[in-house]
Image 1: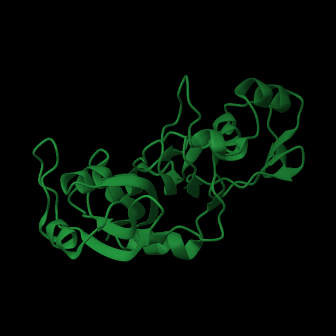
Image 2: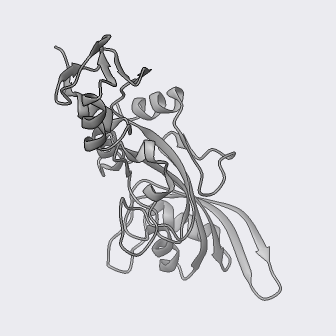
Length: 247
């Protein structure tokens, strides 16, 4: 079955311009479909078959975008905010035209892997509590994180609101002896996403997280070559693995 879409919607979705711009360009004869000038910006096209050009340039339509962002601290995981910079603000106009949104959230002061997309189905699959998608965090914790903490996390700890967490895997990387106090470097893998969960889990065993960074979400791993605040689109392989892990 043909997948019809309005010409102005297709061009707008691809970040070509505003609806008024597209209407003006169409009337000026700058828009063609299969080599025919189309002046009706409401003209229906099949984006899988028809060739759409704007001022001679082919506009290759795609419905979804999948973006890996190395979220910096101080930026909030939202599509818009009246006070703070959002993760969507870090993207260029041509990607913002797809109306991407963050899949889940990272706290304002947390950095690391964040997936943005406009694919609601994939987002739901990754966030569904029934899917138990693992997420791994790197953290620096004030105090000595012990094997006993790992055992507590493995069975589930009680948070400040009485919720008992699902089993989590703790890996102690090293203990750092500073001039004033001891810190621990750890990695923690959880399969749920309660509010401030990692910080609250450590608070439940009497310790404080001073730095937090997400490394993975499902099969997706933060690109080590991606600077803080930078983004890139997922590779075909990354996307296939992410989809495959949810089947």
